[in-house]
Image (cartoon, rainbow, N blue to C red; front, side, top):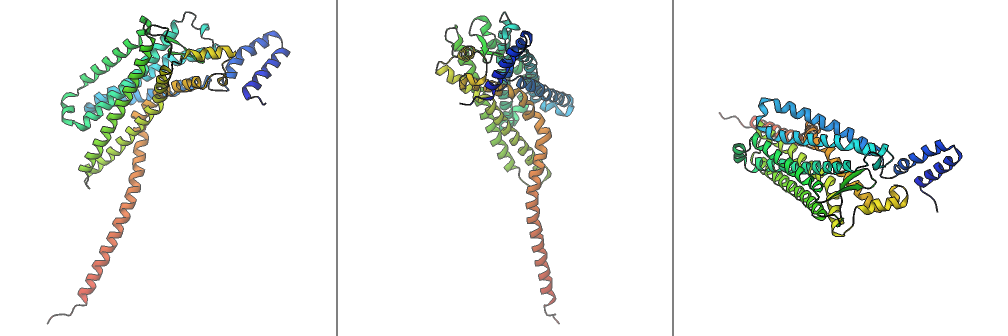
Length: 392
């Protein structure tokens, strides 16, 4: 049997450690965990890359929202800009609070106890994960509902949807989510370290902790419900846009502007739905599966501890998938500013210009053909007139 790259690397380091003096051997042994882990899913490169890209994207989004919000001609868009700005701020704040902790654990050799002997930091990390995760989902639902109301009931929307209503909605969402996230601190549920020991989240499947099953199920139900609301409202919005676009079809400048705006919005909404499904569905579905099958997330840590190191090949596949699922959910914080704002400003217009150019080419070819036929018919008519006998 042949050994994999991670095992070969471990054997090589053991041999070198025996040949060198004790100090050098100790250094190699302390770093072997991180190096072995990097062979699989566990690598410090993931949190560093996600933190940098998240900070850049959300910072750009906040700048654009601030500039647009200050413009007087954007008064009608202020409620929507408030939601996007709040989403970008929450995503940025979440990255700044959680990513440095994960990186510190990697620097400590994947030993959480070295940076948090009391366990309070783990609870803080879990509160951040729950708060910023649910806030992002609920804000996406709030913006989807607002778009659907603006398209299906424009008169009601213009009379009732004010900036004050948007601010109140944002405050209510933040307060309710924060209250829910603090329940484990009050004894309802528990936040525990998750494999490979670099992050903390809800202790899924652990029925020994009071209220833990209720807390985990509620989180999954809230997340799935938010996804369904967002997808349903976006479908309603797309349908309403297409219907209005057909009623306004014509050759006028306003009709062309409405068609372009409809195309951009439909593409954006499809992108939002794809990002939400890809980023959040794996985690929420896995949570439901672990709860229904009574599989505890603590089993991953137990398996890794029994194996002696944290290589991803020595733990069950579900544990690796659980880590991948939470990374996908964190990836949503990076993609949010792009799908909601930046891609629309940068790429959507270029995409629509290309699509319109292709469409115009076929239209112009048809117009040129029709023009040539009209000219030929006109020339034939003139020739017939010339050949008619003159009347005396």
